[in-house]
Image (cartoon, rainbow, N blue to C red; front, side, top):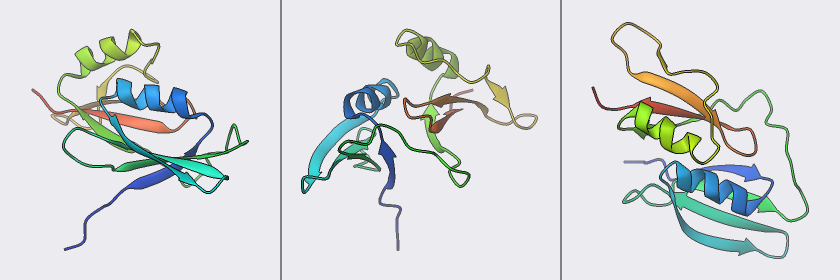
Length: 125
């Protein structure tokens, strides 16, 4: 059966993006130079492999996200605790946690340093 291998998007600065994703619980799996033009940084959640490929094109500091990008979603066992930990690292949610429907999971969104939206989905309760 097919499986999702990874998602890739372009970043403006490696260290700030790696720090953001580490704050969300990811770990850097490896870096791979692409000739002299770019560097791919593979990030993954513990035990899940490199599911996020961050591509830094040397000399390019920002991108337009465009209208096609939505978000990636990451689980959070306790959303309030997660947001408190992120706040300690300067990461703020777009708005307070909420549920899309009655009885649904609590969610909220944060943005990475390049402006990409990341949905945090509470898995407890």
